[in-house]
Image (tube, rainbow, N blue to C red):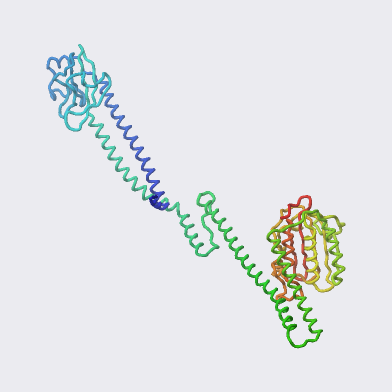
Length: 511
C-alpha cells in the first residue's frame, strides 16, 4: 500500500530553510576548519618548546643520587610548566623529577618499554587525576639513561574550549540572523510572483484583459511573465475567436432558417390554395403552381449553396491545371454582355505602380487551379456588379501579373477588406479585378460583405441580391487556391473586388 506523501511546504519556506541550512553548513565547516587549524597550531608550539628543551646532563646524575632540588625549592631551574622525569639505564623510572607539582602530573609508566614514546616524537598522555592532558617527549641521556620532558595542555585545551563556545554562540546568532534576513530577502525576491498570483486570481475571475506586471527579460520571473502573457494573449484570442465563431454559427443558423422559411411559407400557402375543394380558375391554379415551382427552385439553389460551402469547408477538391486568367476573364465578359446589356463591361490590363493608367497591352496571367471554380468566382463578381448597381453602371474587368504588396494586392492595408490571411510580400501573383462605378459600400458593410448570409439590404429583400452566400463561396474557393478575394470600396467611389492568386511558376499547391 502506498503511503500518502506529505505535501511540500511553500516555496518561500523551502527557500528560507534551504538557504539557512546551506549557510549553516558553510559556517560550521569554516568554524571546524578554524578550530582544527588553531588547535594544531597551538599544539605545534608546545611541541616546538618540547623539542628545543634538553635537560642538562648533571640533572641525570643528580636524579641517580637523589640530589635533585625538591619541587618548588628552585623555581627557576625549569622554564614555564615543564616537568622532567628520569629513567635509569635499565629503564626504571627514578623517584626524583624536575618541575612544579602544583597540579596533577602526567600519567607515565614505570618502565621505558611501556611508555609508548619514541625519541623525538611528542605524544599526548592523560594526567594522573582529573581531565588534564600533557604533551610528553622522550629524550636520550648520558650512560643510557632517558628523560621524559612534559608540558601541560591546559592552555591549548582552554583556548580550544573558548573557541568552541564562541563558535557555538556565533552559529546560533548566524542561524537566527539567516532566518530573519533570509525570510525578508526571499519575500522581497518573490514579490513579483506574489503580484503574478494576485493578477492570475483576477484573471480567473473573468478579467481576461489583465496581464502579468513583471516582465523584465533580465530575470527568470520576468521571462516567465512574458511567456505567460504571450500564452494569455493567445488564449484570449482563441476565446474571442471561439465566441465569434459561435456567434457566426448562431447567425448562420438563424439566417439559413430565415432564408428557408420564406420559400417554405410560400410553397405551403400556394399548395393549400391549390388543394382547396372549391373550383378555381385554371389561370389562378397555374399561377399558384408557378409560384410553387419558383420557390422550390429558390430552395434548391439555397440548399446547393449550403452543401457547396460545407464541402469546401470540410474537404475541398480542386483540379490542378494551368489556368489562363485572361482567357477566363474574356469568356466571362462575353457571357455577361450577352446576358445583360444594362451594364457595359470592358476588359483591360491591370493597373500597377509601373503603369497606373493601365495603358500596357493585355498579357497572359496564369495560375494553377480549378478553371471551373475560378470561373464561378468571376461570374459571381460580375453578377454582384450587375445586381447591386443601377442600370447603365460601367463595369471594368482588369487582368495582369504583379507582386504581392500593399499597393498591388495580396497583403493587408487600411481600406482593404478580406476574409483570408495575407500572402507573403513580393510573391508573384496573378490578379483579376472587377471594378464598378456604382455607389459603393459603407465601411461597416464592407467589413461584413464576406460573411455568410450577409446582405447590405437590411430588409433582406431579394430584389437587390440573393441569399448572401455568393461572396462567401467565392472567398472560400480563392483561399483554397492559396490566394484570397479582396474588396476596396468607399461611398460614391464604387467597389473593386480583386481576386489574387499565386502565379503559376511559383504558386503553392491548392489546399
